[in-house]
Image 1 (cartoon, rainbow, N blue to C red):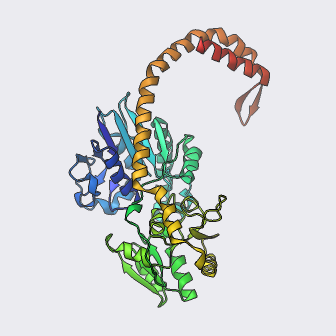
Image 2: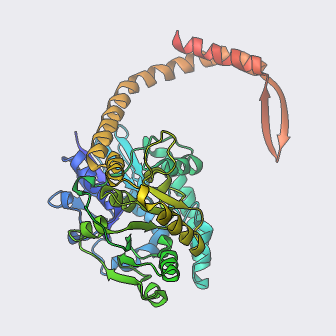
Image 3: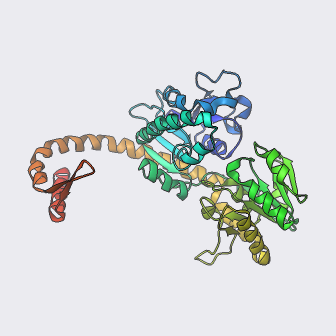
Length: 430
């Protein structure tokens, strides 16, 4: 069986790239397809595999202007050559769900989120655009949004990375999707006997992460904050920080464990689809003070109905005052947190569990689709054979017709509708 793993681009190592790395372990025989990549940016388990980019992968400076090519990407995605593959697994938060696959291939989309600049955050992206680019963004996203919805209908099976994203998939694509949480390497976590007095932030310094709230809150409270990460917001954040805030820049992965294990708590103000960093912090037994929205509601345990110990505290709003309130509430009952229980909670998100679940889902999808194909053909022929017989009954079910906003609406009597469906079911099963 030929398998392809498809991801848009490999720019830096983030949560989506870690997921592809775990997918490569789950499907070791898979080839890798993407639009853009550089060999040094590939995750560990992708190196040495058959990795191919798109026709513009050779262009210099591609990682600086690829975002401006949004209207071009649909045609580029449809040109990704997946002929001959039996199983295609796309890792998608943008447009890779739109790849063309063979008729008998099974396409599973592991969806990190529907593309946010097209859907739930469309107006926010528009308002943050420079004035001259707004018309281009407006009409470009209008076209891509229609294409994105149609592309989602070609996917055989969606898998969501959280319940938060699951609801978004249903809302914008009208598709069902089971949840398989993304992989987190909790196995290397440990509980330190002692911890220091600093709060911690880990991740990219971008506007959507709302690190500015954490910097301002800790500056006003006089609390130590260690910021481990780099990004476009670095200079602005450093300019607004007080003397208690320390910026480390990008911290190598082998040094992060000490910062996690010895922090007082992790601070997290982002509205994330899932949020890998809070799980990583909990794998070291450290509590999380997080914005109580989105993926954090699924990864941080607070006021559990089953009575299990809390693993953090939530603050209600993305404001400096709300973050300060969350820190103060945490400090009032800091002694209640149990590091061993916090670490135990994190283990449900381990990479090994992800690999087991995604492999099991793919096997079931392949077996189900192969089993159902001949059955579908039989049912199609039966439906065509009985359609003439049920048409009179269907016509009888039409009770009234009204006009609503220029569209014709058909209303059926409830009892007749049930009989109509029963008749179809009887003929189809006969």
